[in-house]
Amino acid sequence: MDKQKKTIGIVGGVGPYAGLDLNRKIFDHTLATNDQEHLPVLMASFSETIPDRTRYLLHGDVENPARGLYRVVALLNSSGATVAGIPCNTAHAQPIFHELVKRIHAGGLQIRLLNMISEVIAEVKSTFTGDTLVGILSTLGTYESGLYEAYFRRTGIPLLQPDKALAENVHAAIYHPDFGIKARSSPVTKKAGKIIKSAVRKLGDQGAEAVILGCTELPIALPCDTFQGIRLIDPATILARALIRDTYPEKLKPITG
Amino acid sequence: MDKQKKTIGIVGGVGPYAGLDLNRKIFDHTLATNDQEHLPVLMASFSETIPDRTRYLLHGDVENPARGLYRVVALLNSSGATVAGIPCNTAHAQPIFHELVKRIHAGGLQIRLLNMISEVIAEVKSTFTGDTLVGILSTLGTYESGLYEAYFRRTGIPLLQPDKALAENVHAAIYHPDFGIKARSSPVTKKAGKIIKSAVRKLGDQGAEAVILGCTELPIALPCDTFQGIRLIDPATILARALIRDTYPEKLKPITG
Image (cartoon, rainbow over all chains, first blue to last red; front, side, top):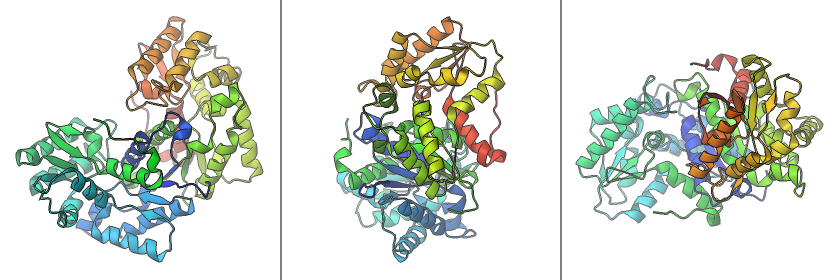
């Protein structure tokens, strides 16, 4: 639109509801009392052109999702977006994100892509002390690729991963074609909700004081700040606030409570 | 993206949450069990550039919103959208919508703009008989401009408008800076919810068998198919289904129940 105006871009479609969730959080965290006070946001949801991130990382039998992600970032850029975020944790695994950043540089795009996981790390470091145990729930793609471990290694904050069986359960709650959140999210099925709540509880039993809901589908099932005394960290909320801070910091709603 | 692919465009920002609501309904009504099966959707939410529709219709002290709406439609078009919808009832009032369509023709845009109200009329005609009384709740802009009356006149189906006092209450439930849905929608305030439920009940008491929630903010407060025996008609759901039918009819989820 107006070339002087900063526009927030959302790489949607990974998954479609995660895009909506990030977009809603941008609106929710903006200081606005009418339509006109809201920020310019462009969301491109092109799910079909971006292969499944976890499948690429675990099996490698689809093309690198970086290619499809790049096309969406390029479209957002040519449509006027000046900054963008991807509401998909798994897309931030090194083999995908690094390739995407390389393509953005090579393509000479004039858009700044925020890194959701780096934003989460910054938030965790500013909120917790070094001896706080932080847990993580995610897809198997994020789990097996050691995405959060790699980012956490430098912080000094210990990261608690679930065992493999629990990780597989959580993955099913996201991906299962009958009860998974990607297939049925309005509302989330009872089965998916139960698995995710039980997983948070198990990490809490092992000493986690906070749990990162490290797949953007998870907070759809558990849209709270704390659950049974355990602080829940939602990367999409942190990314939404980072996108506002990056473009219109004066419009960022203060955190209350 | 892919020039062969049909892309659905959403004129977002009128209001921002109504855009999200339409986008969610497109996903909800698509036959898909994973990300890749979802349809390509582009949503441009540029609220600041589109003056308030009701204010323009009632007071005329802001520029015609058609100008801002046109810029968004043109952006969607140049970004690859082949069809578009506007999830704002008031924007369909003749002085705005007619001007927008004129600009689209003059600009030579290659995008088909669906008319949400025409889609609602088609749905009402196929669902109800000529002697069914259908009620309507809306903003004062839609109310005073006689938008739905003008469209209904040709159908033969009688339309029940609320009296002025009730219409003003409903308008406040949408627009009030403290409790209105445009200012506070996650969650909707108790006061706004109460006003809207009571308004539906009053139209029902006067014989309405169905009520059109004729402002895209209203179904956020009352997200049901029926309320106390009265069938609720949500123009955004009808528009979402029309956009899918127009692009990928084979992906349209059948209506159940």
